[in-house]
Image (cartoon, rainbow, N blue to C red):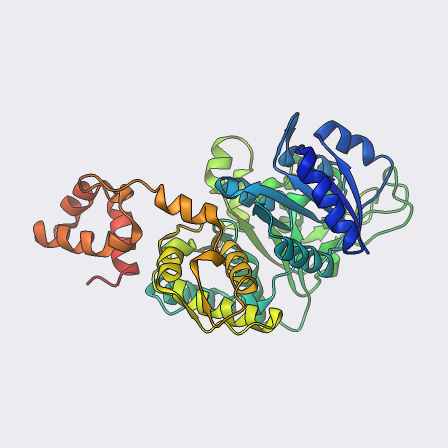
Length: 442
């Protein structure tokens, strides 16, 4: 039985949800706005939060920010309409563990609750990514990505992994560690986006008893926990300026100083960081130190979005169907033509994470061998139907399925003058080269 806080302003839906969770052995509490949430947090602790994104006096992101600022590491699932999926992705960047789209399917909700409680993180535990959730792919983009990983993994170079949320940044970091000379030593991951300013310094460098209110015992930091191995800092751009200064000093001097202590401790770790934003923009905005950036950026790996991985998408679909069949005791063997077409047309703002969720839901709702259109969210189908049809030859408005033929037609028209082709397609040359490589256009 789990103690679950429901934050939902729709009174009817919240009552139905409360009754449903009670029926399945849980202990739900219900509040209807952000203010009431902050109040109940002073009275109770919870095993799980179910938070509606849109609330009368704020959003679910406000609740997430409050939890992070106060060092409250409760598992959070965001409930949102399908049109808000990009916002749900943002919530995961801020520390939510999953999201579910409305209208909520009861079986899907129970599946997410069970999965969330099974992987509930402890206060100082790193976020984990199971290797089975990811496969390499066979596209030119995937080949280039893993060539870079193979190249830099055996070195001790600091690496920045940049990619959208859900593209598999931690998996890439673990692969770098596994293929390094440090692979027999610890791999320690920290989600910087889920830590408050004060907690981040303590997590990284440790503290001594009495260093601050609540520091009742000495605590080792994650630098020490990763000694000899790899320290992975996910969403490093979320670290406060003060913590950035301490991190830079630790990298320069290879020593750390726990909070409240005068003792300096030598450390030997490899640093791998990840970000979903371009840190150069953060530097220009005064949010990230340029000297720290150059320390971290000895090598950069760019993880492509799922929509840019070409034929890999079908491999991932098949992979997640097999995983979901095993987990849910189903036997989905093929997709109906409309389902396959929709899955290939959708732009997947949540990348692999969103694809896995949609496929898992599809398998759950398919008792037969063939998945039909009814197993996909209605809002997903609507989103694809509402995608604007292209007018002229503006590549940015062209459905992905037509990109390759349009690029080839344009190149032939301009006799393979790539500058002219890029101008006609309304993209820059770098993007054109990237798309030619992705579609394997010679």
